[in-house]
Length: 120
Image (cartoon, rainbow, N blue to C red; front, top):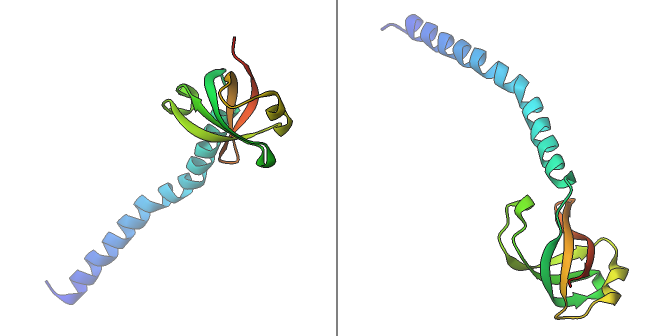
């Protein structure tokens, strides 16, 4: 094959690649926006109360460590983890070892406790 034919095929391949890529590039911003909306919707959904036990209280930093049941709305199994309190003053009502029910949420990429009360 001579050089002019090689150049022609290369140009054709470039044109084909460009024709395939352009619609994908136009769709990318919409796909990213849809992903962000879906993530926001997942965090905006009303969370169900979850049973837990208080393992540690860090009132100075507004954090609590909870051993909790599965957080199904976040596809997480049962585990022990640290949560930031939306209202740190709530921590005054609790002690390590208390059985509680809390409403988790995810805000700005962090898990928070929206509300918490002692379990019956």
